[in-house]
Image (cartoon, rainbow, N blue to C red; front, top):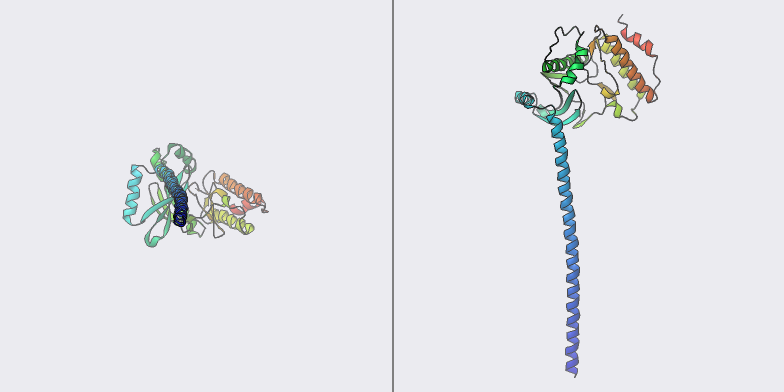
Length: 292
């Protein structure tokens, strides 16, 4: 009898152990399921991340392709082979007239590469800024040649402004519709446009620096920007750097004074909107055109 009770106790204990083992196994299976689910979620996130990157790259490629036809690839290839640049990276900005790309040269120095689009519509309004400019006697009818002329016009305008010490990117090379110039920014991060700065520091000083540019572009470089606003002023090191100077005309252009008034109006309007007290517009206009 005692022996039977002992064997029965052992049997019950073994059964309990077996049940606990089964419970542990079930719990373990649940943990494995949870663990596997976590792995699945992680893999899904990685796949989604890759998919987003792929879509993003596709968008960038579409932007590149908008100016990079077979002829453009050939021209860029020649520039790379010449040693001026070692590689062209991502896009800095995309516009109706041109795209600007970040590029690298010797010693990994950054450059900005502006590639003008060969487009019939843009070439039509470009003629308005070329006709009447004494530097360009013959205006071509061919769309590509007008764009090439426009690119060389920006190169020449930047040269004139840079030569007299104005704060513009230094132009370095021009070939057909490709302009290479100094890059404005920190590392791979380009300088923002003034329009994107909510509260620029020392706004009165900033206004005076922009007015200095307008005045000395006219008096020293004999040019009028023609489209100056917060949209084409970079804000770098708390200073203005003027860009997009392709439409600038000489002070002898028949519409030079009209363009000058427009530049002054745009700049004064912008600074008034951020709470800066501006000088009298008419007084400043006559101060600019006074060449004595």
